[in-house]
Image (tube, rainbow, N blue to C red; front, side, top):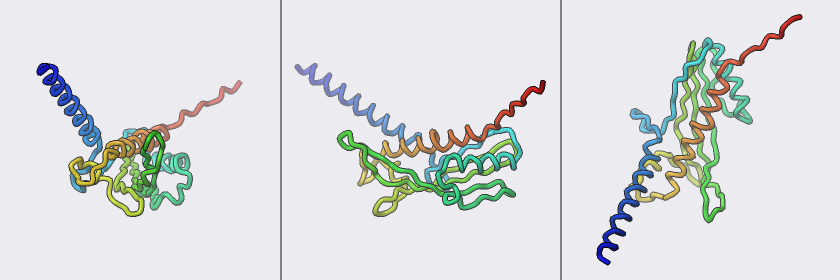
Length: 184
């Protein structure tokens, strides 16, 4: 009997350690800018085209990705190749298998174009409900107000930034192949 109880204690301790490692990996998967301390998704992407061509593709992408790109963008400067804007998306959680809204995540984005490459940046993520607070709070698992939903929120933040925003932009920034019709 003692051996069985000892086995249960060791097995449950192993599960606790595994759960802690999984939780930490969600937090570690979120990039934080060391200078600002803000959650920041940023990548430089090598792509064929001049600064003007890349800027034009990025401008077209805005109309493809956002329902109202005029209201989303604050700066569209073709001379410098910079597009800046702010947007928001819905954060969800599940309570007893019912999908509910946790609030809106507002964020800023910037697309900078140069010859042969462009860089996108998403940062300043803020959860808005009755009040606003920065999403960096979710990175602190020792916070007194810690909620078990926070890793889920962080995963949604990462999924939106990488799988939606960045993936759509990268796909659209690839130059379209022009098929010439054969004259006969």
